[in-house]
Each structure stands twice: as C-alpha cells, then as structure tokens.
Length: 77
Image 1 (cartoon, rainbow, N blue to C red):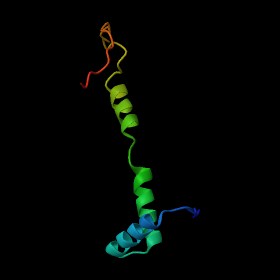
Image 2 (image 1 turned 30 degrees about the vertical axis):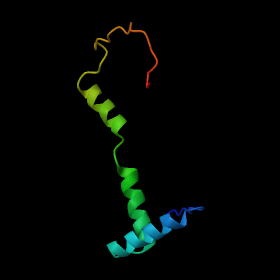
Image 3 (image 1 turned 60 degrees about the vertical axis):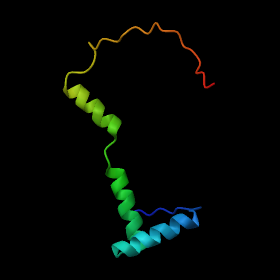
Image 4 (image 1 turned 120 degrees about the vertical axis):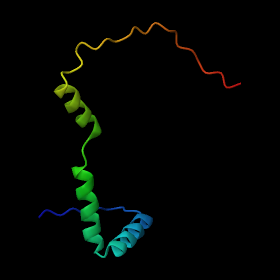
C-alpha cells in the first residue's frame, strides 16, 4: 500500500486529529486514513448533477431568458 507524508501540518490540526483518533479508539494514522478515504469517495455534486441531467435528456432545448437589464452599483448609504 502506498504511503504519503504530510509536512507543515499545523499543531492544532495534529492535536485535533489525535483527539478524534482517541475518541474513535484508533491510532492517529488510522484516523487520518479513514478521513482521507471518506473524502476521496464522496461524490462530486457537480458531476452527480451533470449525470442526472444527461439521464433526463440534457438541457439543449432549455430556454435561456435574455439579459437586457443594466448593471448598477449598490448604494449602501
């Protein structure tokens, strides 16, 4: 199994990871492995939406309204 090294990790992050690992009853390495695995497997919402639109037939015929309004600056005064 490949390994990675993370340099420059903030001490506060390291302490939080150690606390989480202790709370879950595992080593800090196992905790980080679990966090990275879950993050890498999480579906990309943009790609999921694209797949759903393509399955529904796409958006080629979707009407796009004309944008003819004039841009203006905000007045916070």
